[in-house]
Length: 107
Length: 157
Image (tube, rainbow over all chains, first blue to last red; front, top):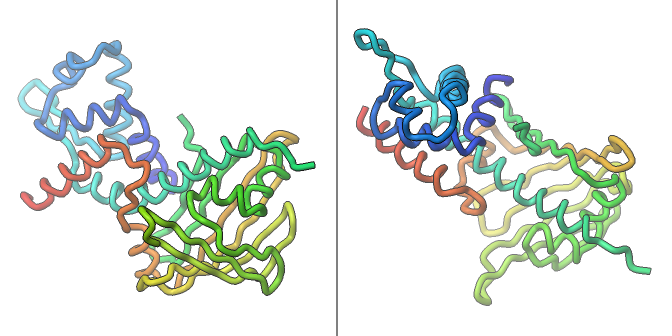
């Protein structure tokens, strides 16, 4: 259960989604990924670590380099299964919260 | 960032539990479910009927360009203000069987509240099918794009 929630947290972050998009087109080293972002290198490393831990990315040793590649199966599992449904309710509830914050009781 | 709305769908079970903590006092949260005009605003649907009582019923209708594109109805089994609503939910003109919904409202602090929505489906298969329906609203482009890529790659494998 916990692991699954982590996957959703992983894809909820815009930088991590950008990393996934990047790596989805071709496998890359951490350095090559980081060079696409203005974010500090350790921050990118942290994102890579999270994405790897929840199996959205997989590491592959190639000589002295470690390449990250996109785990399409995992992404499909997550994306198809629950996230759109969760997002739909999240959007509705965000609207509810906004509506009720402006609400003035009728006298 | 901690997600505000959580969905728990355990493998092999015919239920889902949606939880959400609101930055609203309990009374305001409940009111959003009680008053038809408010329900219309946050659900984005027309409320044709809403009888908040035991044996009462409700009906929603969503139109697009003058045509009804979605309608749903249900029966209310329990209605305890600021505490709980038990009701059925049925999507009209759809193959989905009626589902049972237990809504529980809790006070966290004077300014915060929590909603737990426990939905029971006819079968595991129907639950999974519903979860997989394409919910167009609110899915951002990056996410769609990722899904497309994922699908393509699966086919290639």
